Length: 250
Image 1 (spheres, helix red, strand yellow):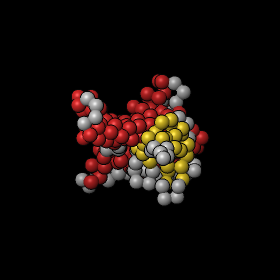
Image 2: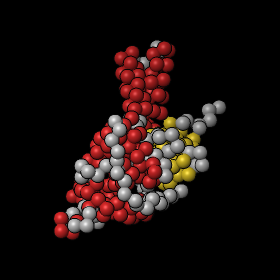
Image 3: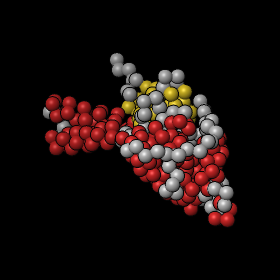
Image 4: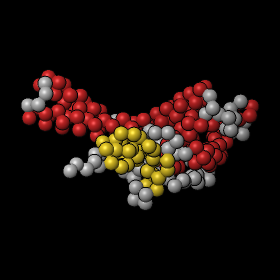
């Protein structure tokens, strides 16, 4: 008698940084995903802390189907070739398609060295090495507000007493102040980096989103330059600002 293995399971593990990752719960038959149900950001695998994502995560979904169905199609095609069942050309073509799906599925959502370094920059302010864009909106707003206060405090110091006359307000142009050549405080720049990422994700219009996306990339490049200079022995000045208290959601 044939018993179908039917149920739900987690699949499509992507964006893995050690203690956090994204995966999707799928309805499956015989272990093969059929219908995606819900994607989750696993914040800390050791404690099981996780949050539901608003939408099914595209990379996780592709990885879940590519890895599972690619492996199944490859295995079935090779088995058919071994048995001599069906067309040789068709089975070979299906095997190639299966291998391609399997390869692409495993490659999808894998973080490279630069991604991991960027996530590590976020970690002091998100509590975990993850992309803050994945956090629920309420958590992103709370974290944005906490970071904004700390970033503006530092930006006021760097802007100087005459910032009003100069037309560069720390409240409205903190990213411009952070990008000044003389500003080399790594902690401040890391906060600004995370804040720019959050502001872009919460932007209501395309122009604002692009502004903070551009600021995020420029701050990331500057942090690399500052890190290289620090490794060479240059000192970075750091004003006194209150530490960020990120909001955590479980």
